[in-house]
Structures are given as structure tokens and as C-alpha cells.
Image (tube, rainbow, N blue to C red; front, side, top):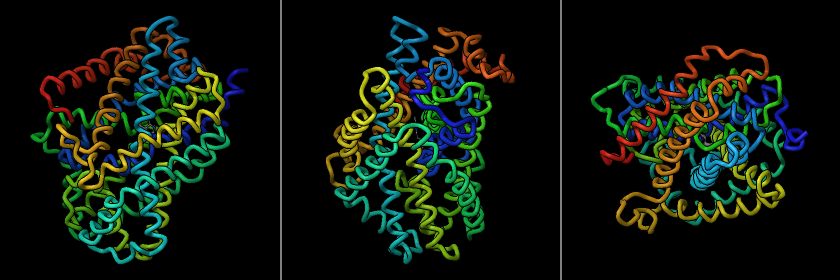
Length: 455
Ligand code: TRP
């Protein structure tokens, strides 16, 4: 059987952990806090939560259904369900999007390696204030060669695991580590919330000031919800395609969404109290988390050991996400172009590294990519916005249009219930997929463009 040759998860738990591994990553711990900080805090968080459940969950289920039914990569899946149409281009957009996201994601993942190294060698030990932490971070982003090297290292590790195939490589890495990460985050959140001045941070992140809401904030919240759940580029189509028959796929999808959101909120509970306590501005941008965290470890007994464990887990969480990004791209070239896994991993990994270089160079003040002519932002942030916000939003919009209007809700529900488990609230699900998601996402995109509030 084709599915056996492609590989499968060992069961529902294997799927949940692998999909949670894809969803949980730098999106929760790096991107969520700094994006919330740049977009005014509490109101952003509320809108984000709303989008996770009103748009994210319906899209998760739609993508899983498509993968489950077709057992194909995103391009192949649309080609099977809508033969001879241009729908397969939607799969193609997803594969391109995953490829570019991987290129800049690997740069930030490289930062986690640098901090892990700093924790292991004790170089982070003397860092107690935000100023000192800023100096450490400055030394990293002032060293473009190091960042290129770290991104390359991260991509190489990712490529090695993806080469190992589905349950052998991906599943094993996740099964033990995600629960440990959760426990550590809870411990850190408790420490952070009890820091002097921490309450101010909680107020910032959990009390909504609705006057701060602009279209830009709403669009950023949508992008964050999709990015964090790994939606809009076919990752869940691909992962759903490896789901063994007979497993309750919709329940698994919902568990993943809840798990992912919990981790993001925990990251908020760690970062915001600590940030106010240390006197860092919430709008500090992509470096925010990296500057704030060392100040938390400095105030934890045996902070160095804690820091080593934390950065190791963060690197692993990032790794299970880069694996899913590369896996989608690789599975397309393996299934549709007949490449061997090894060839696909080598060629695509190398190409992705080439694209990672300008992102790695873009964080160093004075570099060409630090402030792009005419745009005034750096290359990495630009990629993050175009592919991480816009392309994922367009992808999610089109998945809903496909599932709701082309393939049809009854077929989606049949695929989701193929294991024999009934989908609860299936008429609400159909309504969200057919009407709410497409109208909301299209409305946001149009409004953002018309009012030129691009972020
Ligand atoms: N969701 C991951 C994170 O939060 C990143 C990621 C992995 C992703 N696969 C994806 C984002 C596919 C968008 C699409 O870190």
C-alpha cells in the first residue's frame, strides 16, 4: 500500500506529539512575545486567542482532512481532489512559503544554539541586568559570520533528521521532550511572575486596551495564530497524510491547538513580567526574548543549570518545527518529482541555506540587508511579514474556500469521521469554514492593503 511505503505515525499519540512539535517552537516563545509587545499587549492577545479558535481550529481540521483523505503532499493532494484545476498551485504556494519560512527561522534557531553555548560555558552567568544582557545579544548580532554558521548548523541537523524519514526521525525526537518543555515553562512562569515589578507585565499582557487596536494589530494577530499552529502552507496536510486509519483525527487536531496556545501564553507569562522587572521595552523587536531571558535565569537558584536545560529544549522545539517545514518541501519533491529522499534533502537544504544568508546578515547594523532601500526594514523581518503573515493568511483563506466550496463540507466531515469518531459541532464547523473564515481573512487582507497598514 502506498501509505506504508511513505511511512506513517505509530498511532494517534505519535501524530499528536509530532504535530505539536511542529506547532510549538520559536513561534510561541520568540515570535509571540515580541509581536504582542509590538502590537500593544493585551488587546493583541485577545484577538490572537479569538483567531486561534475561530479560524485556526477550522483550518487545522480542513488541512488534516485533505491530508487524511488523499495521503499526499499539498500539491498532490489538491491535484487528487480537484484534478485538472489550478488548485494545485495553492499547494505550490504552500511549499514555497515553507521553504522561505525555514530560511529565516533557521537564523533565529541559530541564536538559540549560541545561547545554549553561552549557558553551557558559563558565559551567561554574569548577566544580571538588561544592559549586560543587551551587550551579549549585541555581540551575537554584531557577528554576521557566526550567525551564518549557526543557521547552517541548524539546517544541517534538520536535514539529517528529515533524511531519516517519518516515525524513525521525527517522532522519536518529540515524544519525550515536549512534556519536559511544558514543565520547565511552568516553573519559569512562576518565578517570573513573582519578580519585583512583575505584576505590571501581567497587566500589560492580560488587560486589553481596545483603543490600541488597528487593522495592523488584527492582521498581525491573524498571522501569529496561523504561524504558531503551522497553518496555511500545507504542513498539516502533510502530517495528516501520515495518520494511520482508525485514529480520531479531529480530536488530535484540537488537542494540538490547545497545547500550542497554552505554550504561547506561558511564554507570555514568563517574558512580560520579567521584561517590566528588568526595564526592557516591550517593543524591542525580534531580540526581545533573547535579551529578557538571561535576566530571569540570573534570579533563579541554580540558574545556569536551568538555562542550559531551557535553551536545549528551545533549540529542540525549534528543531521539531524546522523538521516539519523541510518535510513538507521534501515530500513534494519525493512524491511528485520522483526524487530520492537523500537528493531532495541535500538539494533543498543547500538552497535554503543560501536564502538564509541574507537573513543572517540582516541583523547586523550597517549591513545592506539591515535596512532595505525604500523599505527601511531588515531582510529577515520583511520575509517574516510577507511569508509568515501574508502568505499564510492567503493560504488559510484558500484552504477554507477549497474545503467549504470546492470539495464541500460533507466530504470534509466524512474524511474527518473516517475513523468512526463523530465530529462534534459539525454544523458550526461547516459555517466557520464556509463563511466566517473566508470573509474574515479576506476582509483583513483587503483592509490592510487599502489602508496601507501593512503589518
Ligand atoms: N509553528 C512553528 C512555530 O510556532 C513554526 C512552523 C513550523 C510553521 N511549520 C510551519 C509555521 C508551517 C508556518 C507553517 O515555531
